[in-house]
Amino acid sequence: MVLKRVFSGIFSYIRRSDIILWILIGVISGYSLLLLNSVSTATGASYDRTQLMAIGIGVVGAIVISLIDYQSIANFWYLIAGFSVFIMIYTIIFGNTVTGDGGVSATAWIYIAGRSFQPSELVKIMFMITYAKHLDSLKKRELLDAPLHVIFLFFHAIVPVLLCYYQGDDGAGVVFFMMFLAMSFSAGIKLRYFVILFAGILAMVPILWQFILKEYQKARFTAVYNLDTDPNVRMEGGYQQYHGRISIGSGGFSGAGLGNGSRVAAKSVAEQDSDFIFSVAGEELGFIGCTAIILLLLLLMIKVLHVAGTSRDGIGKYMCFGFFGLIAFQTVVNIGMCLTLLPVMGITLPFFSSGGSSAMCLYFGIGLVQGVYMRRQEIDGSHLNRTETMRFSYRQMKSL
Image 1 (cartoon, one colour):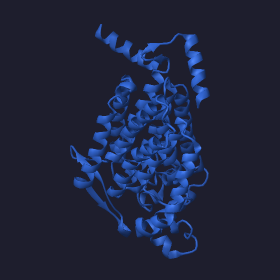
Image 2: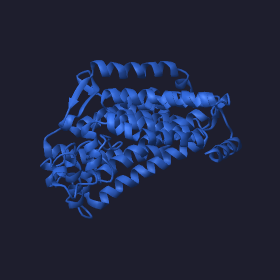
Image 3: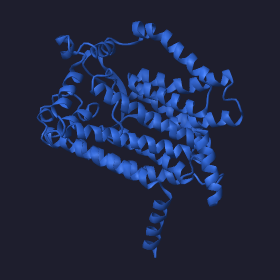
Image 4: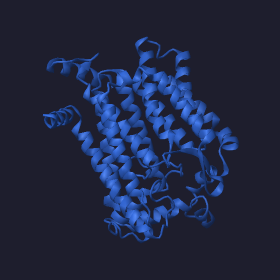
């Protein structure tokens, strides 16, 4: 009898959830494990086992999160916001510092049960909730375009950006900023505020370059345009990108085959398990493997936007757009830096790069998106009939 209830509950969950989304995530995670297994086998590391454990925890967490009404979660926004600030400050004070060549220094990790954890990855998911609640609250009170409240929205976003800066993890800070833009745009904030914001950023560029950016960060920007002309650049600020590009090009159309990458085995590309996992796909699976990564992540982004379009309310829609902004920006930047189109920013490829914190927390984000999908036919907990559902979905799609 108990077994029957368990199976009944599983089948009920499967019917309610977005199966296509689960299949996409499953394929992406499986592909990631294949690439990381290849790196692990060649280098004697255990990236694949760590990733598998993180995926397992993430899947369980995603299911639990999806079973809880996201409105109920959002109602505790003040606790979520408070914990987010606390854990980021705690990391700045007591976190583990990682240093590298050229002045790289980041205090962005803490140890939990003997394993390192990057709190900013979890805070990204929490930001989806708190900022969505903030937008929804202003929208309902028709204050979304009031200048003072738009300023408050900006300060809501700038807090995690500044905390990431003090951790020495500017890449994560930029991700928060892009999530802020995607969610704000989805809420319908007037275009003039975006124009003012970008004008202000442009005006700040000289100050940022002169007083904020560290020397190694400036070197990464200039290296992109000098890799082919200056040998010194290839050995210093552009070392990763230069060798990453060689690895990708060496794979040709179909690659050397999984586990057969000589450059992977020689560790020719630094951080090939995380920031430069795309170079592993390029060398061992060639153009076909790289294209598959891009298509899979593109399909995932389209699916998340589709869920946003069917959301029952603003909070669900804004959270989905936040997750879309996270995935889209990290994908574009990571692949761009691997192809030497953009400077290295220490941003991982979503779901593919190694890193238990990232993989696990991204699954938590999937749990929120699944929760939005599973409640698309409800209004304040009431289930809609088929005709009402069609009308409601149509209105939501029109509002995108």
